[in-house]
Image (cartoon, rainbow, N blue to C red; front, side, top):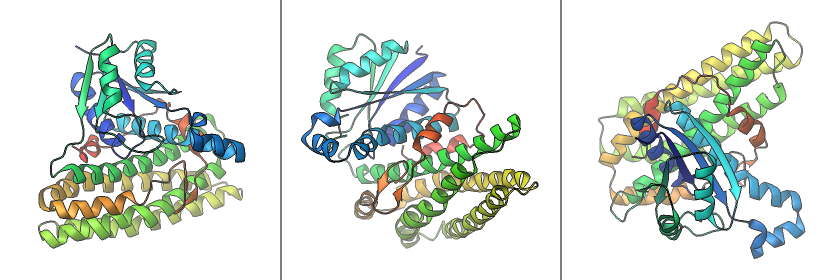
Length: 355
């Protein structure tokens, strides 16, 4: 049976659905994954050429940020699901050929691609045409996962893929915090407090300003309107949203003490990281195993249409430049941490959101 999957990803909202399907598939096979992202050559487009001529740093950021974010979230999801993985990326205007070459380069024995229709924009390259071309040229088996259809679940799939992707972003940052703290304690060196503060700032801003409102104002509110069955769980989740802010404040205070040379602050930082990560992972697991499946059952097609339209208007700002959040400039540092062999003890159930 297949032992090594090459999973081709794009950075559309449904990319995380591809990740979810591929991780479940690989786990069932006992296989490992190489996630691969082939971005188009931005400089070859009119928009990209203009950006390059006006601001070369902005051009570099625009070119590199998406692939870092996609691959880091994919790797986080795989490790949460207990699947061994690696990542690779390439700039190519011939994505089908790039996918096949990557599969051979990594000695993969199965290509895992998705077909979800044409997505507009510079990065919406992984569409049915690419899949058809890959099927024509591939000399390896190809598994095509249809992750979008025209049925009434399409908007639900899209909306839940967005919040699941945001969960992966949050989990990636938490994993980075844990690894920075762990490495410092093992090596006997001081952690990078400035980088950890940036991570904490992300965990403070993004959930409160963009992620939690999606859940509370849309999924939670509509689910309460459709059924009272899950009100107690929803009440608890909203309480946990408030508690997370308290835990973040505690970590921020511990980091401030550490930065001022407090000899006892290292232990306080380690304890605060563990408390925060444990609480957030438990919270996200409860959402993905109880509330999101319940929302699938009870929300109507009209509900999901409203939810998806609202969600798609607000982008995940991780490692990118977002009008809602500004810059989160720690992509490369986190991307370097993602290859750590440190175990991640998060529930595999976090992978169920976008069936």
